[in-house]
Length: 265
Ligand SMILES: [Zn+2]
Image: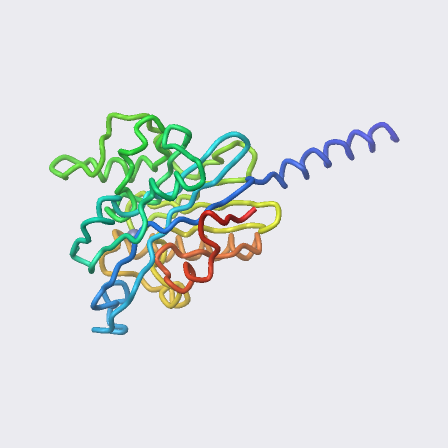
């Protein structure tokens, strides 16, 4: 009996510590800014004609000796040449390459790049990481490279096509969550850090806090039903993990976060 209890205690300790694994660092990088004239593009019928300023955020995560880049933002070229897009005026105060160089990280050092989805404001610099393994949902990849669509990055590259959630490092510290709706293969990222706890990087599951709070579906979304289901799923995970919610394009969120070269650990 004693031996059995001891074995049970050892097993439980192993399970508990496996459940408590963490990534070492998370850097928040400035990946652009959008000035939109009408925020009701994202909130149909609400705040019609009201302008909105939006952040565009990338995150760099260190796990052991590996780096994972989450989203790549607007193309770095926008730093020199701002552009008008169908949803606003896009600028970049800093390049992604410059922010990586500032902390001594070269593109070749980044083993893994994951993208929330394939809209141009998230995949603008994917081709600058030609050797990194790109983690993307298969549904997103198939949609982005459907016949007749203009490819936004080179598909002939190291790829891992996911069909659902993915435990990136195999220890529960960093998990890609399938959250379709905005696009067919949209995903979010859940990160566990020793001091900061659980952080949910929602991608474009919602575009700003007010939309999240009201479970709104932008008119451009691929599926309203999937968007609502993904909101509900993320809300459950936030509650379960007592996680912080970081909405990629929400400017007030970005402005209160520590930005690279500072980091979360
Ligand atoms: Zn976006």
